[in-house]
Length: 468
Image 1 (tube, one colour):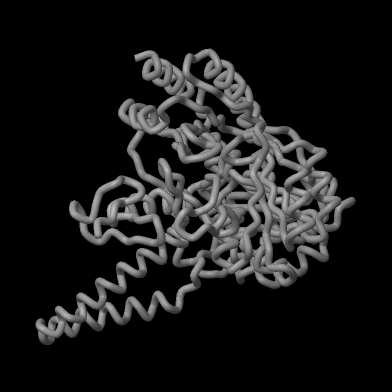
Image 2 (cartoon, helix red, strand yellow; image 1 turned 30 degrees about the horizontal axis):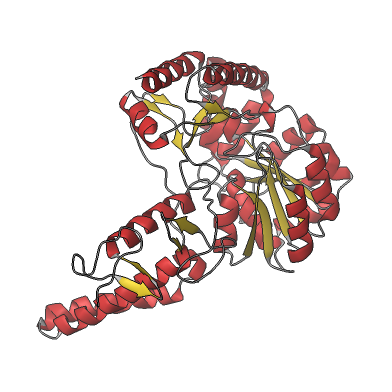
């Protein structure tokens, strides 16, 4: 009987290995392509689609992602099952072949068995993830990573170098980073015992999830948003509750409250300003979530310096509130330092899962020098904010561009053919971030605010591409 792939419509007469499930089928080439697409977005910032999987009927949500074809959908779980089914068939074929290959065949069979054993011991959620990777392109204008475009001032750099020379590299760093914490406490007027330093905010996210997942083992967050909430939650075996943002990329508060009541999550993560959309969530929505949640609410303020708004002072009022900050967005991505603020009782529990000496001596000493010379950081933030507003206005004047308002150091915008424009910008030596995927971010690109000169180069190139 002839089988036809539901995605590309190739038949079993034209291709081998087409797998059929009920009334739907998929060929090996489409399986590989769809898996690559889902893998790309499992390690990237977001993936969002709609509807149920045609193969198993499973709905989008939790760890399930659904790829939308022309007339058919397939989820990542079905892809993994079909891939495993094909792999099992290959293993049986290998086994038959090794009988004829003698010692060499025996080695191949042993390797297959070892790989099979290793896979059987890996968590199901981990098997479905891809390792974090950033596509590498050599472009002189780099506007893809939400980093600051500014180097350290010469005087501050000299101070950093002098301090680094004094570090006894043969000794462990301060295990609690007390020098850094004391300076942060003084700058923010926040109690010292309510501060934890992490090796980037990513480590702090993991520490929070490891600590506060002993109840329902559920974590809720809006989508699209920062990918590490999903990646870390999956790695720790938690149930993920994803709630779509509204048409303005703000929190859909009625839906969110509904799922809070239904799922009672141990943790809620809110990135405000949000990545990749750039907007700050409405205060009223955040307050409603704080008031309805019976668990911990984590407000990730990685981009708050560009929004001039923080909820840090509200920790005194809301005992279930944690604030995250990052040094990466304001000029110091290379030292990988995140900051957690919370009630002392909360911080005390999180500290129990903090790895020994988690922040190295170089990071601690550099951060101390920066906090002693913080004036230049504020100046750079103000310049980036002014440039962001200018770039936003310029984007809105370019035909074929829909730019979304931003409170961060980047701007999300939509075009007619994101993949083509992304490639053409690379050809012109300009790297931005491509978020084109089915759903809310279809044909969306994200540009980080660079120096005024870099921004002009980007705007000129984009206008030229769209007018050609």
